[in-house]
Length: 330
Ligand code: ATP
Image 1 (cartoon, helix red, strand yellow):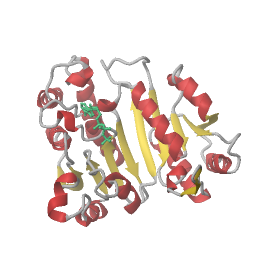
Image 2: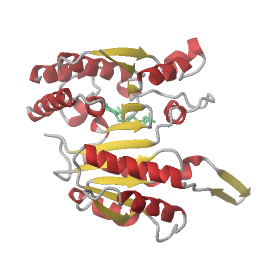
Image 3: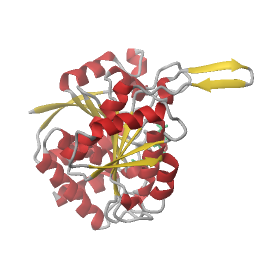
């Protein structure tokens, strides 16, 4: 039986992870969940929000499903999410954004996968206060990180039957840094003759995404553009309740929804488990369990088509009702 780390998080985390684990179990797929607590709730006992045991569990199991974890603000703790990414070298942030049945959005047929570089760019944290009136942030782009993220995007395209990979930069202005990213894209692209290539500037991409999002397939971007564009794309398909994600590296992969722990609706049986469920479905595809992934996805779509959904999508179902409806559709 496959052992997978399950970080059930805090806020709405435990509610949605229970729902998702229940749905996966009902699909017939047996998973040995290695449940790990993290976040605000463990600080009192263990002193930190991300104890070493959580990292060790992921190192051992290689794969984790993670519900949202809050990092307490102003207490000197590093963000749990950033720390996970750094410690496990999860260099690729993957955000598939696809329309869901009955989830009302401005556009139909959106099916975009955003691949964001996760380790450098302006997020390298190199900032200087030059004097009282001037500050600078340094944008780091390296050949190594750019090559591996572009390769990741093309490999993803091949593995998932996608047609095109489009690189997004501002290489006409940042000729050296974005220019290097673009050069790496071209080098990598040459090894994938069956995938179409496209190059676009970030400003043009933004305009086209809000006019014709159907024109895009897989996007690969440096960290900062990737951060912004992935939220834009999440908005295109219905927002936080349905936006899935994953952080993936050479050795480990952590699948998690985009949304936070939503303390405002915690414990009310109101949270939408869809984003975590979609993350789990992507995880099942990643580990090669395609038939279970498809089965669960179909049941989710049928449930939404039947008009059953949680309050954030305009429905009346509780988290449990919604999960039970998906289980019925399995
Ligand atoms: P963080 O800084 O941790 O990302 P945040 O407060 O910025 O947290 P969220 O916790 O994602 O953002 O919540 C933003 C809003 O979206 C809240 O009103 C919350 O109730 C709502 N929300 C987020 N996730 C869900 C969900 N799964 N189901 C229903 N509502 C949600």
